[in-house]
View 1 (cartoon, one colour):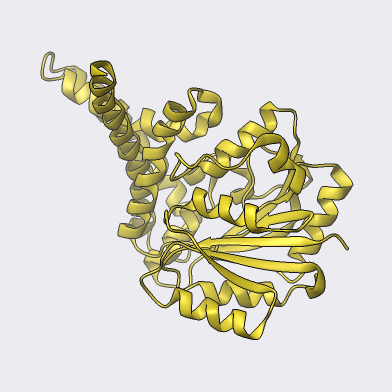
View 2 (view 1 turned 90 degrees about the horizontal axis):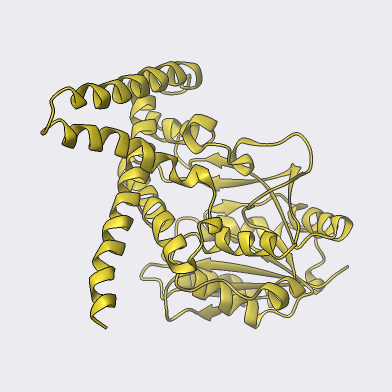
Length: 334
């Protein structure tokens, strides 16, 4: 068996880290070929104590500090501290089946891949109507677009990005580490860098992990506002639009399709009808789709989940544009 390093970045994950580590411990991968490195960003809850208790009982688990507190720094610390021939990046919000590591390493060897990932099924820990609506929207193409690792595939496919993937060690030697300027999207950008350099990334259909999503509209808004925000800053920092995919900008175009006609209507009133038409078509589509997928929640809650996801993403992208515009004068002064 190849030696394998598991790296888990985390911060303030007391609700999830124990379940994550329990699923890691159930692995069929030989423990003597395995190391688990948890990189903690100075958690302010019980996360560190929980990880330390696992490390005390299992010598192949260790905890290291991430003073920068951000995910890309944690990932780079984990890669640098690891010794395995293969490296799998995990997320503390997620549980993994017992054969997850074995299947991904085997697929990576068989396919000659730079990175191999699994389908990620979205769940919530509680089963309230609101949580169910959020779970539905994060598993549906109308919610997340053509994100195949969320919606599933029926065969092995090449992908632009995969979650919680298995990397050969030489992938990092060849393509570098994660970009620490990117608080979000560092994994997407890294996978794009791999693909541009000729590396292959594959999504495996019959390997599935379970991601536990935010369970409130406020949590969904905060998370996806940041996603939308960093969708704009990512190409700004990397100086290429190829660091993301078209689907990452669709919510921005939607929100602009409402805002721009509304503002232009101040100059010429009929522009308001364009914004109204965009909103009307959106609500009709969301209403129909909510009736189709929202069997475990109420219709209005399902509509609200779609709206929170799409509007938070779009407004986050506008926030990113504003941030960039604020940077330009300061750069010109220098």
